[in-house]
Image (cartoon, rainbow, N blue to C red):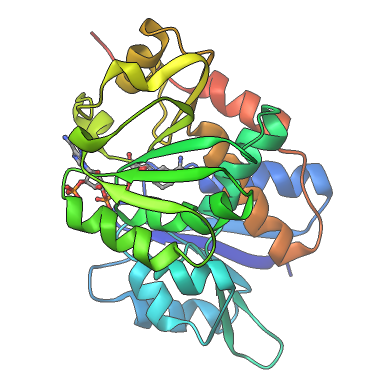
Length: 276
Ligand code: NDP
């Protein structure tokens, strides 16, 4: 019988994880079935218990990443700090190990797929929600010169900076307190979802600045349109992050790393522009 994996979320119809993991399984010859499970709110642990009676590993998406963190027995270091996880694996003794692969997925997309160093760079991170908490340890482990976290609610940015200050140089501030230019700007706000831009000065961009929007779509995101219009050297979106976080989960589960490039490319081709 094939090994069982799944993604749990609510809603779940939009999830691209079954498509991505099926492509990885086919490519690497792994015998597995990966499905999408719609979980009623408040029912995460019941559904996870039921799944793990026969299942091997779970991905977890909105709104259950904190529930999954609570559910787990052991954690990777980055998952422990993130307080939210997207990957669960059942170990041989029956215990559940948790990982957060979003951040390492984004870092691999920037450094491996796009050949851009984070080491020694001045990095601006916009937003201080769950996604940003998940990326900070992997970003800081690349040894940037400095990370500035700017957020609408300033106290959340300051709190994040405090929580991660033992790994590297990191400060938190409001959008109006951003000073100087940055080599890498990561948009981790959900502003793009509503077609809005975080209010940051255009002077943050210099001729070699790379801009990364964790959101993605068939068209360039509003943040990346803004970045391109202010002459950013490169604009990247979160599709590569999505595929790479899946590749990281797959590698943890199966012990074999899939080639993400063809999957990113086919996912890109399958994105449909929104109707005007
Ligand atoms: P959260 O709801 O946890 O956080 C949202 C953040 O956006 C907060 O910092 C919030 O500020 C800020 N924000 C929201 N609206 C605005 C606005 N209009 N102007 C300025 N700031 C705003 O969301 P997540 O952290 O879970 O997700 C953030 C983004 O990352 C989403 O776009 C999501 O799609 C993307 N993402 C992409 C992934 C991928 O694989 N590509 C994986 C995970 C997330 P405040 O604190 O003041 O409310």
